[in-house]
Amino acid sequence: MNVAIVGTGYVGLVTGVCLAERGNAVHCIDNNAEIVEKLRGGAVTIYEPGLEEIYQRNLRKGRIEFSSALEPAVLKAQVVFLCLPTPPGEDGAADLRYVLDVADEIGKILARNPGTGYKVIVDKSTVPVGTSEKVEAAIRRHAADHADFDVVSNPEFLREGFAVEDFLRPERVVIGSDSERAIVLLKDLYEPFLPPGNPVIVMDEKSAEVTKYAANSFLAMKISYMNDLAYFCDAVGADIDKVREGIGSDSRIGKKFLFPGLGYGGSCLPKDVKALLRSAQDAGTPLAILQSVEDINQEQRKRFYRKIEKHFKEKLEGLRFALWGIAFKPNTDDVREAPVFYILDELLKAKASVVVYDPEAMAGAKARYGDRLEYAESSYGALRGADGLVIVTEWNEFRKPDFGLMKILMRQPVIFDGRNIYDPAKVRARGFAYHSIGRKSHEGHATIG
Ligand SMILES: NC(=O)c1ccc[n+]([C@@H]2O[C@H](COP(=O)([O-])OP(=O)(O)OC[C@H]3O[C@@H](n4cnc5c(N)ncnc54)[C@H](O)[C@@H]3O)[C@@H](O)[C@H]2O)c1
Image 1 (spheres, rainbow, N blue to C red):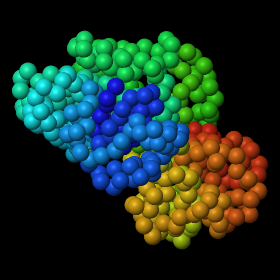
Image 2: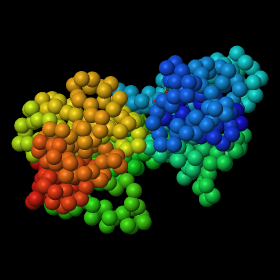
Image 3: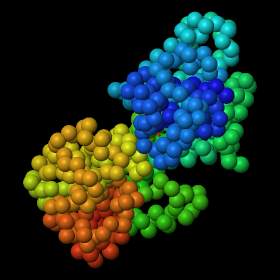
Image 4: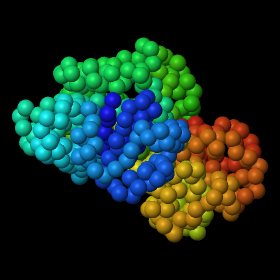
């Protein structure tokens, strides 16, 4: 099938490359000339495990091409995927400018080229309820009434860090449409990806739009619930790891998304929670629970930072910190809304110096802090002379370090573990002061004040 992808960021590039891998002819459009040039020249622009290999293969075979020209791609395509940014506006609502501007362009293209054949325009961006109608209206404003197209909501559920795997073997595909023609075309496109038993769920556009926000907000709710519970465990001397095992083995609750940490970040959960909150308020049905989810998420990084302050009796000036992990989660270079920025801002405000290390996301810190931070080539390199190590992202390479070497390199053997990746007893037995989340970080109770 001939497919156009508009916007080649995390979702668009993965969608394009995976569709090409299944034999489709894919035309990727991005208005960022630098991205297009790199992708044309064989340089993949984002980090996702497994992406490079299938990108290179499909580029070589000529199944995928990159350009800034929307018109030729739209004219050729049967299906046009909109994979455009929907960042939060000032009031938390999703900013639909990118999506609607492109819809407007598509309308003009269809108006200039009548009789180009039936097309499905797919909203893959995460968009508030009612956006499909707006996209359709934006196209119709230019294209004649009889222009032959449908607008479908097809939210994307891929996880950064597992994006290729998720796209190639989705747990489910949601198609929001009441057009039989569009549904048949999209089912055809997705069929080669679906493992046996994993459904295509067809619904109306609005329900599909709500489904995406409902899914991300539910996941955010699990995270905030566990973070708040960890705070409580810290105060009463219980162990959140044990509580997690205890509740996670109940199949109604499930084992995933129950890990306390520094709170959720990234380009999806924070903005999607805010956008659903806003939509619900606008509809006169505020989702009170989501306000708490958001508030706890902001509070969680502050609670963690207070552990650092408390350990050093509020005197951080002149201390040197090593910080492991910048990305908002492992296996990505994405630093959007990463909790690390709060920790870094506070440490710098307190006049501490910081050496950071991340296997993939150093550029994100360099772009924001420049020479206000030091950048290490390796995790151990960051530790030299450090008064404390702060673990922000649970990359696998941090999980089994050489504690003996760490102790030699550090000036003070203190670890603040924002992801609970070590066994507290073992780390303390090696002579470290160890602070984690909800696991009796200090001897005694009520560790967070
Ligand atoms: N990142 C994720 O894990 C994820 C998962 C599911 C859904 N989503 C949703 O998918 C959408 C895209 O997210 P993303 O992370 O891929 O964003 P992104 O910022 O990585 O990519 C968007 C791309 O669109 C391009 N673009 C902007 N305006 C354009 C225009 N007028 N014409 C052509 N290209 C244009 C940008 O240059 C950029 O390359 C968002 O709505 C997001 O919420 C993201």
